[in-house]
Every structure is written in structure tokens, then in C-alpha cells.
Length: 417
Length: 166
Image 1 (cartoon, each protein chain N blue to C red):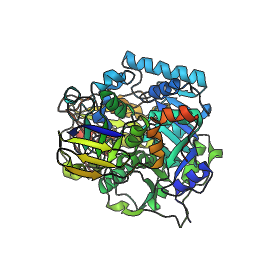
Image 2: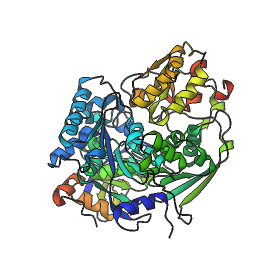
Image 3: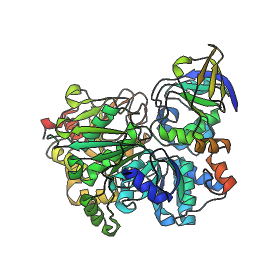
Image 4: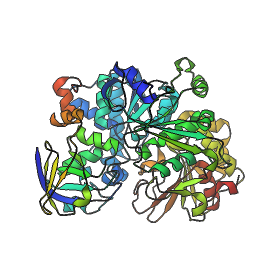
């Protein structure tokens, strides 16, 4: 019987033919924790005297959530991660290196791998054709120490996207549209496999945006078959030799197939306070915005910064609207600097953050005031997410964000492109 | 295992941000202190109102969002004995089992705030003593049952030095 991508990868890692619904113990290739979840993972291992890394070169500890440290408690957590890395020879990605989900695809994860991460957006790496999923600290701690985990093999929803996007429409709009369609729990326990002409033509950057938000529909993983786009991305990262073709069998069994015409998608926004509360930007045009944030593991890559710069060049943020921009990694920061993008953004009134999660974590670099509205390219708009339960968060693409920053109110990017 | 307790009712889509708000990030290595803020963004008074042994009954997609295991952990530290919901987000469900917090999927429309429940995990039965009705729930998958019986994933691994799930 044919297999989905998830079934194929998990079968390779558990030594038997795994099908949706099976419970298996599987080998794990890459483990990640970050400074919000890593300290608890380390303490769990210390409790049972198992403070070791099975595969240290592919165990990565990230200091990316609130960096550089805004307070002493977090500084002490950072120290704990650094000490664990020293003891176990695990890899440490320190302050300023970038967001875990970006750095892990730049340098660590390969097609066909299983990755478990103590961060819900670990599903991002599925864009390279890896089975990547988020878990809690204890699960990942055990994965680090033993090099394996238990998994229920997920059923898969296949999402076929055909055709070209309209002007002003980007992968983020597509993903917000999909989440609005199936709901914040519409894919709970499932894998989402993205395919179709639109996906095959899409850059890794766009595929990362889709897979990053799979969890916002409740999914366990988001997956894209690896192809020539993947090969070329890996070559650019100096890892061309790690390319493998991973694709579903033509007769794989899908629980649900969703067909989407890319041309029918409009610039889309998620309204407070759930990600599936989506609507076309057109319908909420004019809502006053106090802060625009462009960045995060969802949309803090070169493609995103280029779109923002194209719109913001020779323009300026609205005097009432703050503009905060965070490149997702050191590599991206450097590239944006070389391309002159940072200069354009700074001249447009933006504050550039160091690589990291920025205000999406809710404790620094742009915490919102009571009653304020932020339009952000991040992946979550839950109550309190940006540090204040009395604030309101709207989610959109970098183009919508840049257009909104200029006008100081929610703006359709097609008006400024 | 039988649990008895009084219910606090919550709605749909209670996220781990509601349970363990991001603004208390600095308390993640001080769980008893973080537990004083449990569910603060769903009900600011909750930590003060609740008593040990109380239960939660919520709507659909309980625990969505961030993978922070601190969320079920501080619920347990605060003394919540179990969580009932129409459905659970995947990572939260797994984390709750790992930290030994029973999570039960059932029709919570028939449970109101203040109701007294008796829950039998083996039989998969919820008795609503206040309303005089019984609700059934599906037993845990054997893998999760085993982890829960061993007192959580850490105890399981400590006991067997490996996964012993098949």
C-alpha cells in the first residue's frame, strides 16, 4: 500500500512498515530546545541522572527567545543551557545567531530526517521534506538522551494548491486562508502535506511559512516533498550532499484532500484573538494600528524583508505607527545588510532588532500597551501573546504589514505595490 | 484511579498562553511562583479561587499553541486533579500525560461550573453527582495509559532505562 511522506519517513526510522494510526518508537535525527523549554528539559534529565546527548552534533540548544537577555532570571536559564552544551558537546546556538526554526533549516535538518523540538513551531522544518514536530520539554529531553521517541503515525491531509497568486498575495495569505478554512483544530493529530503546481514553484522560504503554521490548524507536522528547489536551497547552505528525494507514493491514502486555487486567495488577515479568525484585508481596511512587526520564524526571511523594503523604499512609517523589524537569523541579517535592505528599512523609520523571536515572546522589544493594536507577520495572535492581555494582535503577510506601517491603518498591499 | 472534585468551567480554545502567559517567561525556572498565575489570562482570579483537587471542564481545542510543558505542570502544582474537554490540542495532551495530569475527552456541555464529579479512569466513566448523570469517555491509547500508570514519562524511562511501550 502506498505511503504518505509522514508514513515513509517514520517507517524508515522505526524498522517496520508504519501506517497511520500505528504507535511506534522511532529513531530521532535532530533534537532542538530553546531557552524557554530547554532549562526544564535539562532539569528533567538531571533528575534521573541521564544528562547526556545521544547524538551531540545534532542536538541543538537555542538561545533565541528574548535575546540578549532582558532580565537576570533568563540570563541564568541561558547559563544552564551553555553549561549543558559544554558537558554533553551538544551544539549551542547563542544570542544573535537566530531563531531556532530558521537556523535549524539553514544548518542542521535534511530531507528524510525526523526532528523533534521543544517548541510548537518545530514543524517548520517539514518544508525540506523532513518529519518535524513540536513536543514538550520532557519528550525532547528523552529524545536528546536516548536518540528516540514514541510517535503515533498521523493520518495526512493533502493540500493541493494550483495556479498563480494574484499581485500582493503571498504564501502567508495562503496559509492564513487554509487555517481559516479548516479551523484552529481542523487538523489536530494530522499531518498536512502541501503539494500542487503552486507549491512546486514556491521557494523554500514560502514553504517554510506554510509548514511553520501547520500547528495553528492543530497539525502534528507540515510537509512538502523535497525536489530541485530543496536541492538548490541545500546547495546554497553548503549541504548539497544531504539532498534526498522524499515524496509520497502516488497511491498513498489521505484522510482528506483539499483543493485550493491560488488565484482565488486574497491578501488575508487573522483578527484577534485566534489564528482561524481570518478575513480578507479588504474587509478590515482602515483599522488603526499602533505597531507593525515584521519578522519571526514565520516571516523573517530575506524574501520577506525584500518585500517589505520594496514597499517601504522612499516611504516612511506613519508617525502614529511604530515599525519593528527582526531578521530571523544572523545569516539573514548579514544578507539584508549587504543588499542595502536594512538601510531602506531604517530610513523608513523602522527599528531593527537583533536576530531572535523579538516581541512575539511577549516580554521585550515591543510589548504592547493597554488597548493597542499590532499587525504582525508572526504566527499567533492569542490574547496576551505580545505581553499584554489588553492588547489586540492581527496577523498578515510582510506586504500587508509594510503597507499598513505606511498608512498607520490596515492597508491592502495592492494599493502600494 | 478515582478522582472526585468540583468543576471550574472554561470555553473553547484555551491556549497555553492563557494558562502560562508569556509575560511570566522569567518564572519558568520557578514553577511554584509561575503556578500562582495559572490560567490568569482566562480568569485573572482563578489561582486565588480554586482549591486543591478541583477539576477543569472546557470546550474544544484545550491547550492549543505553545509547546510549553510548564502549562500542564503548573496546573498540576496548583492542585488541579484532571482536565475534561471536548477536545485537546496535540502537544498539550501529550505533555499532560507526560507530567501525570489526567486529561479526559468527553461531552463537557453536560457539566457546569460548581458541579461535583467522580471520575473513574479505568472504567472511562464520569459521574456528574450534581446532575445525576453519567458520561463515558474512550480509554487512553495503551502507550499513554502505560506512561500515565508509571507516573509520567520521566518515571517510565527511569524505571525501564528505555521506552517499554510495546
